Image (cartoon, rainbow, N blue to C red):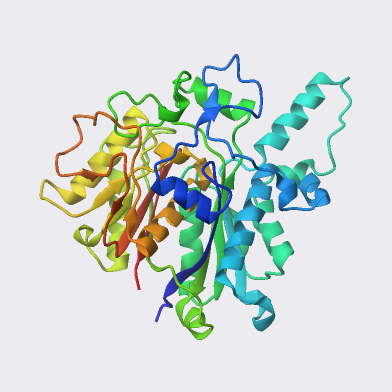
Length: 414
């Protein structure tokens, strides 16, 4: 008998707010996090804007010595996980520390540290004066490692990397370890700090980023006929997954149950999604089957939809292959229109959106989309511009990453 798994805590650090309350308020009210880049001089770049954190100072959360030892992606992970752990309210001194683990994802790891140190070396006199923290700051597994060290969690601990499906991979792994009885509580999610010269320049050269520099707030426009690429975002999302019986016994607040998850591969292209959405459709089908439900029972779908011409339509085709042409109740939104694309952290904050949609019975909007792509079927219920009140019992989060990775997670109201 597999254990049931529930979510008992959440934490967020995003371009719309540095805690759950502010983040969710921004999402529900259709706020855009996009603005001109402040982290570096982007004047010569094709894309000069991104979804950066606002009014953020790591010193408000971490000790100066810790900040020095951490790349921003790890700082973000610590801050979001601290909020989620506090929200969950579990007490380690009442548990075996080996029953609590951390599985955390990051698509790029310490990109900012790597870039800064290499550029400093290139500008110098040729002598290698790298920081003694260089290696520990850039490796992606340092985020879960330091979360465990900070809190004394001695259970399962590692990182996942599957590009933009990274967070859902981490959530799925955490879910499965609890189901199998190898953990009682797992801290999971993802963090990313990709607003650097190398990341913006690299994605820009691939023509993946929007160049709507005259109007950043309206640049991310999933499904719109004039979409021209995604907007880079940064931040972190954290979830506390817990064995259902353990959560009930301690009287924990439960957001929802994790009832299904799956992964597939497109086996098609390094960066492009499968044009017919075959891998994505199969991943959704498996996740639904593992949940014991059909697509007709899903109330809310948070789509991956990044605002790229190819990616949005391949996901639409994947959905259509499951829905067909019949009328359906599934409400759809693409919240990257507000947060930007947080790469390896995207799935975590979108999972949180799915959980809060269930908690508050509200579905957030897709903003900036003024004219839907005519290729989108008429029976697709895409929520535009304003949030709606809706009875959400089941929500699903889609994520797809470079390399053909497809990750799906499903949450159900208890």
